[in-house]
Length: 234
Image (cartoon, rainbow, N blue to C red):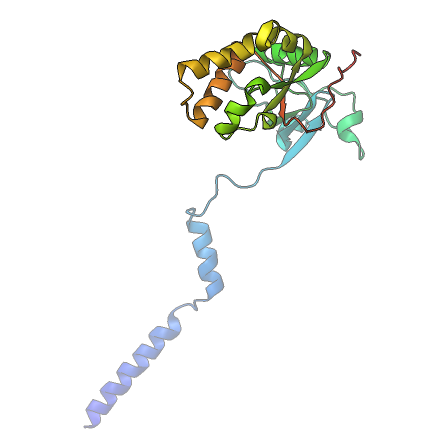
């Protein structure tokens, strides 16, 4: 039994020596080793340094390295971007500097002070609206008062559907006997439908007449207050 005891002691001493000979492992060394050998967590979209530059027409964001002296210019295939005033010194550096920024710096984002140039159709609508505002207006019953009894039977109060239109146009569509062309159109509709048209059909016909006579104006009720006087020219 003695030799068995000596054998066990020898094995135990050998294991102890082996463990003692290995270098100590700490969480810090493990972390440092992993950070040196691994690049899986690299973020190609990390935060970038940006600086704003402004002029009378707008502001733009540039990469800081593009504004630094001796920078490597970023280029792109296309027209040269707008030139903005370069930053100077002090709190008002983006406004007071007279130093020009070379046009080879590519802005990240541009903010313009003024709206884009309006399209011809937008200008036409604006001119038409301004001209409409300068002209006197009158209240026009979409559903004629002369046929008020008929519309009441259809559940339509003629005073609830009024539009303020150009006074000259209002006179033209009612010129003549029996309320003029506008009322004549409604009488023709009633005769064509034999007076049996549904309520929604009357509104559809009203919309068609508004388009036919090219009416434009504010919709309101007959009792609603509305300034009908023309807007004076500047």
